[in-house]
Image (cartoon, rainbow, N blue to C red; front, side, top):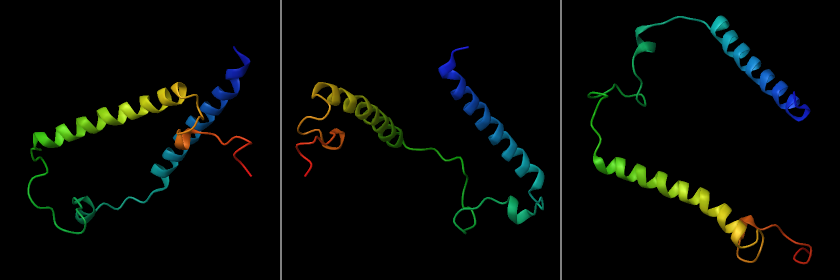
Length: 104
């Protein structure tokens, strides 16, 4: 096995074991007293009105898809701009790293 990956695999195993242990303990220790009030749906303190399975407008899906498209575009555009403009040149904003001649 490659030596550099050993520490990462040990950390990953520890995290997975710890997560499983904490979830298991919470199921064993948590009190179980189900009531009809606890099983009822909760909507900001108001009794639920209408059916939960309502149809959404197509405009909702259009806005959601446009958000995903432009969000992904931004994710790919920032690294491209950092590479294209030299990663720290003028006008890079939060991507630029201060150089010694700029700092006091």
